[in-house]
Length: 210
Image 1: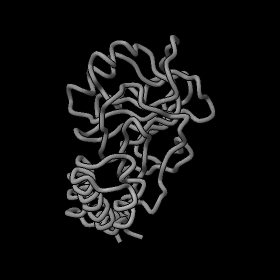
Image 2: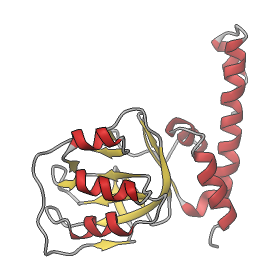
Image 3: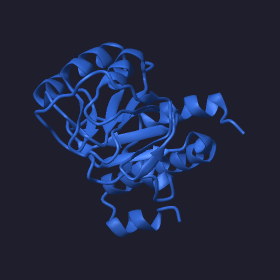
């Protein structure tokens, strides 16, 4: 059964108050991508539904299309297959996507123009930087299932990414995850209150949900 639109909207809003670690816990300690992909712009939270891109390594046609067409609030997720050093993003794509309200980019390749991306404070998660670029003339696909960071990501799945990592929440599981994430954030607020009042770490852990 398709997920309830209200559940997805509520989850989008709640994830903006969360973190990758909280999402991982609410996913029952799952859903995380490989740490070979990491935040290239520190101190940013990136959340939103996946706009998936499968691009042939070394060709940027579908990536350009994604920068121009991905909906505001979405996270562009780029799969270049077994080509970890391929360039998949850059400064021009960042300027266009950021202007259009895209939330960020997750890629299993590399990016260039990293100084520009960092100046723009645009969330990008990838293997690292590279000086090479891409060519045009070979199309890929958008809106298809992709494999990134050891996780299958389908269009519309939710992502939550920050300095700690990237977590994927299947769209079909939005409702139960929403309940668990609320409980997790309640616990984190309670834990902060215990510590602020001089409590011990053991006091915090005693309150942690099973």
